[in-house]
Amino acid sequence: MTTRVDFDTYFLQVADTVAIRADCTRRQVGAVVVDPSTKHILATGYNGTAPGQPGCLSGACPRGRHYKSMNYGSLDYGYHCGGCSTTWKTVPWPCEFAVAPGSSYDTGPGACISLHAEQNATIRAGIRARGAWIYITDTPCDACMRFMKGAGYTKITWHGGEWTSGVPESSLKIWTLLLALDRIVKQSFSRNGRPTRS
Image 1 (cartoon, helix red, strand yellow):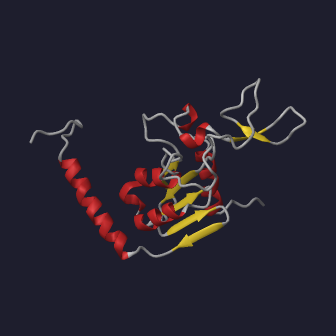
Image 2: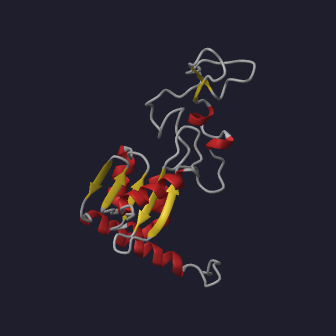
Image 3: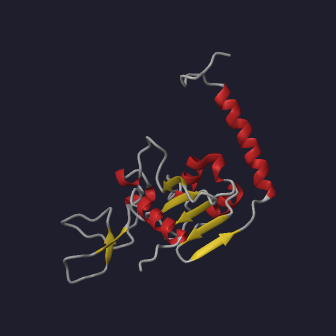
């Protein structure tokens, strides 16, 4: 008799598939927001720039322009800079322009231009994130963990780890404010999607 996979495994595998769309030369991360009562997917997200903005794969990200790549096809199986090296010239890793490993993603010359998968999924889920579960392909960074807790997720799961909690009171206040803001925005637009006149 064949058994079905549990929901945690299922949603982590869905997140693995979502990660394939990531617009990053260094790392592909996916996230899936799930309604815990129905087990339906509410939203997905992957790391990448805002819609319509140039992304890492097009060379817009300072962290992505210079990346660690394996030397294939030679006797030296070391690493080179995938952004500087060409067919005729191999530049050892790290090159002089590479962003130092472990440097800040938010400030300085190597600031990342993308949103993380957790942020993109939460933006798409909106108010439905409160009380929901989120599945991520990698361990969340500290900033995303704070962000997800603030959004009101009751369960955060990644490969090899999990965080669970009841809905914190502070996030209820945030979501009440967001609901009010959502109503104001909806009232500002007519049924055809155009702004109403003041």
